[in-house]
Image (cartoon, rainbow, N blue to C red; front, side):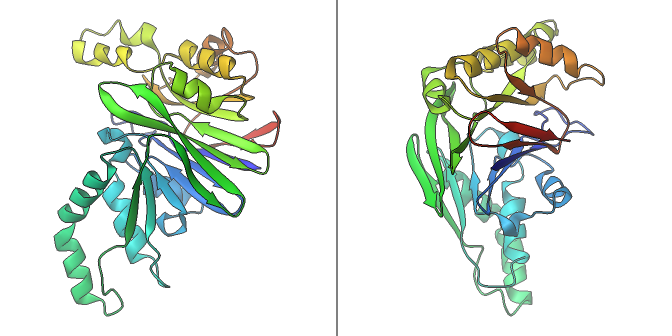
Length: 285
């Protein structure tokens, strides 16, 4: 079984009820955080986890809303680990190393203060960064993770992740329009976690800068069509733009159902879905 938790279902627009984009994947005793939007540490605490429990941090792309708390994750893991300091594995697209290095430099004064103050902190936070655009990126104790290209241009390269464990599989797409790379990555998966926007609502807004997001994100219907083409068992929607208004969940679900006739999941932060081998799933909020 793989457990998916929507830690943060928000967007670049600050929302008092939704943290920034972040998805927690638990499989085979391993814990993966996909993206680290604002507020991710509080959401991790809410599900009984934390930065020091992560097997790896997976980044779909380097847009600010998806990496806003990168520094917080790195530093918090460092200062809350009281055993051997094992490097945080960070897997992302090309450009990730530069962003991580710049983040550590920005936190340089803080790191220096803590090393000077605590005798058991003798070196900066250990991290290992791996950059990929496709292929196998993780294979440990029965859990495999494969990367595939997505399309969020002009943001490029961008990637999605497929996590597999004993016949169960989950794909986390990140921001993308429909594309062959995601179709291939998601083919036959148990679940697809996909970011979505309501283009019908966004296109009515007077600000061109906001309307611009329509050309490099998938609508609810487009995400559902991707899930249908790939033959996935469950479609899990997240990163809602605009935020889903109270009582409107069924309307969003109905839009997805015009293209995808299987299980559709959406909800608030901390919504969880259990993905079992085949197409069986159980949701919990």
